[in-house]
Image 1 (cartoon, helix red, strand yellow):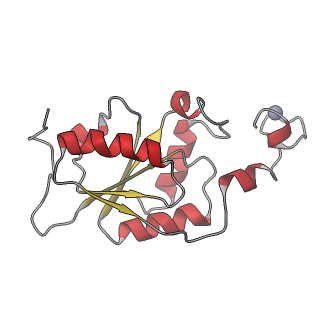
Image 2 (cartoon, helix red, strand yellow; image 1 turned 180 degrees about the vertical axis):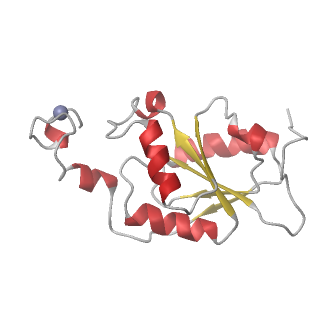
Amino acid sequence: MKIVNSKNSSRQGGIKNVYIWGAYDILHDGHIKFIENAKKLGDVYVILISDKVVKKYKKLYFKAFIRKKHLLKTGLVKNVFIDALPNMKCFNKIAPDIFVFGYDQNKEWNNILKKYILERFPGCKFKTLKQYSETHSSHLKSKILCYCGSGKKFVDCCGK
Ligand SMILES: [Zn+2]
């Protein structure tokens, strides 16, 4: 089904709605540079993957509402939607003009999302940005102490 009444859809010559998606668990310079570059294309909206879905494949340091707060605090993003497939409600509010993927994001998931978007917004364009930083969340997670207060490293405690 194609959504025709979404706000800001395909504004001619106007500011584009640029979407990115991810867990953005521990926000670092790589994320920031990525978002800054996505912002060059238009207004950035983040699909923040819900706790339930992220936890299926990796441990989370921060819950979604905190991850959202960190993203909004950067001042680089227009809004953050906590959402997940198979029903992306955010697109009913803001139609995507451009979807930007990170160089290291899961291709299989990206393709599932791409298919989902193209069925609804055939005019949406897709872009994959190059690597901007050597920082990885997994590397940071191997260094920090656990949030539970045990004094152990996060990776050796509640997180893996
Ligand atoms: Zn712990």
